[in-house]
Structures are given as structure tokens and as C-alpha cells.
Length: 339
Image (cartoon, rainbow, N blue to C red; front, side):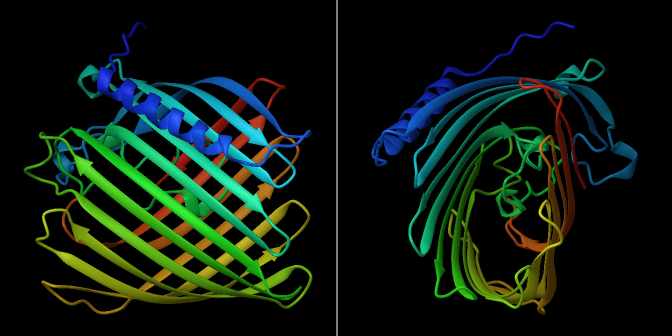
């Protein structure tokens, strides 16, 4: 099976610029005798199944396709005693032999900067995607998800047309420990999504900004109670619609063992736009993590108020399953499912 990967020069330039910026940011990190850079190229080959490849809303027009996925990435990783940083540009090519018109070549860039201090921690995650809209709900370019909160919960607005979407996600976090039993998290998220001229008549560019403040109380050595208050602002780029929201969630995080963690959060979120008002909605986020020496497993159920290019927020249920197993020092097998 042969396929030429056709990526626009502007995409290559943009990716290179993002990589350079990331490396410059990392260069300002404190250096020490123990600090070091590592570079890890990776090639992943897998099979992909999509039961509604064109996101059609008509049941008689659903296209079920299977194909081969090629994932090429280069991870640059920096580590010192208190600082860690990585940046990973990725090219993903999909090849559907029965439906070649659905083939796509997408670009992803992800990076995370983390700085640990005596009683606090700061973390900054940056993601850039340039991908076909019909694949924009792909859970993550990496099957080994470090934080379930990093998995995007927005979608394209579900149209039966195929075009490109560019998306930037910036997620800064601050953690502060008041004592051995009390701590606080401040978590922000900014999303900027834009569509090409093919999708512009049907989808609108938008921004979506979140702020969440969590208080954490350790009741036992293994279980921590969590209360989270959050707000958001969703706005179309043309200014025709703006939606604000606020929510409250309560839950816990428990270490079931040295390798397994359960986190469960439930609550309500209320959103109001300048066009209409809606009743408060039930939201939830339940995840189970298991990390072994060679196996990494994540199962997550999330009910959220999600943004899209359709011009409004909508209630969305999603399930994310990620499983990876290290077969050897250089070979990993994995499975990712999203519904």
C-alpha cells in the first residue's frame, strides 16, 4: 500500500516555528550538572476504525471505514532536579484503501513545562492541532495520557463536509500545598479554534476560556476529598454570540493501590448566552488509572458542557479508553477507543 504524504509548506513552517519557540522557552530553565536533553523519534503504525467518518447526521448516509494510521513524532525532553519540559511535533497520516477521498495528513504539536518548588508546582501545557475536521474528535495523539484533563472535550459541530481545523489549547496550572492535608489547585484553559474556507459557511471560529479553583482535603493517607468551582466564557470570533457559565463539582481521588488511582467528580454547570438561557446541567468526570512497569491503562467517563464550531455549547457524554504495553525497550503496542 503506497501513499504520498502531502503536507502544505505553511504547515511545515508553522510546526518548525512552534518547535523553535518551545526550545527557546526551555532554554531559560535553570541548568545544573544533572540537567540533560534527550531526543526520542518514534514511528507508530496502527489500524483505525471510524463508524461515522463524515459525521453525518443522517443514518442512511453513515460511512463506516477502516484504514491504516502512520504516526511519526520526535520528542525533545529536558530534565533537571526541579524542572521538566518536553515538546513533541507529530505528523499523522491516515490511509483508507476503500475510501481514499477520506485520507488525511494532520499535524500536532504538544509541549509541557513543569517546575516543582518547596510547597507549590506550576505546569504549562500547550497543544497545537492542524487536522481534518472529521477527525477532530480524536482523543489524543499519544496513547500514554499523563493527565485525563489533557484530553480535549470539544468537537467540530458535526457537519457532513470535510475541511481543516486549526486549534490552540493553552492550559496553565498552579498547585499550592498549605499543609500535609490541605492544598489548592488553580487550573486555566484557553482554546482558540478556526476553520478553513470549506467549513466557514457551516462552522464558526470560536474561543473558549475556563477557570477552575479546587480545594483538596486529605482524609486518609490514600483518599482526598475535592471541591471545585469553575467558570467559563465561550465566544464566537465574529462577536455574534457569547456564552458564560459557572459550575460546582465535588468528589474524591483515592489510591486503590501503589499502581491504581480512582478519581470521581460530579456536579452541575449552568450556562447562559446572550441569545437564550438553559437549565443547569449535570456534569461528571470519573477516571481510573493503572500504571505498571510495562502497562499503562486509563478508563474515563466524562459528561461535560462542550464547545464546538456550531455556535453554542452542548451537553456531551464521552468514554475514553487508552491501553499501552511496553513490549521491548523500543517497541510499544497500544489501543485507543473514544465514544
